[in-house]
Length: 157
Image 1 (cartoon, one colour):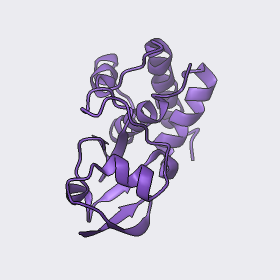
Image 2 (spheres, one colour):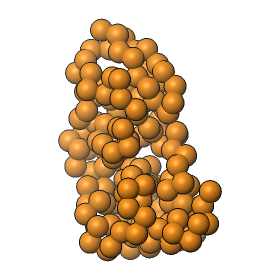
Image 3 (cartoon, one colour):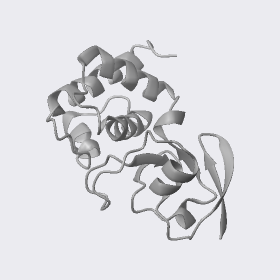
Image 4 (cartoon, rainbow, N blue to C red):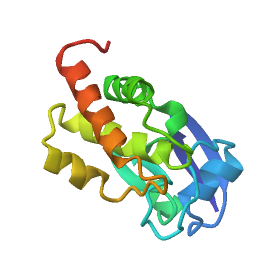
């Protein structure tokens, strides 16, 4: 079946089974490989994309449920919150191996787009579905704090 997908502001027509996970459509059919496969059960967060601005796990989301919605992958992330997170990630050296980082950045930017001054508990809640096998959680949290500070100080345009 054919589905029309709006990914990163562009419309794509894909001919796939409706049950195909969005992750595989994005990676295999559209060639956007920044979104990673981790567990395949929506438990690790490596496959996080934004669906209508919400952090969503693409490994379990059927393409039929994503059709007609605004999909943003790490390649299309360009909001103020996203730029602040990406800059903060560099400044605090958040990634170690880097495999989980696209998912971490997607979750963090979705949080900051809604709440530019999250509490530690709100950060922990928003990021609880993202696993970092290298254990850089303290640097990830510091990156989110730094990005929030930059957003609130008007340092990100």
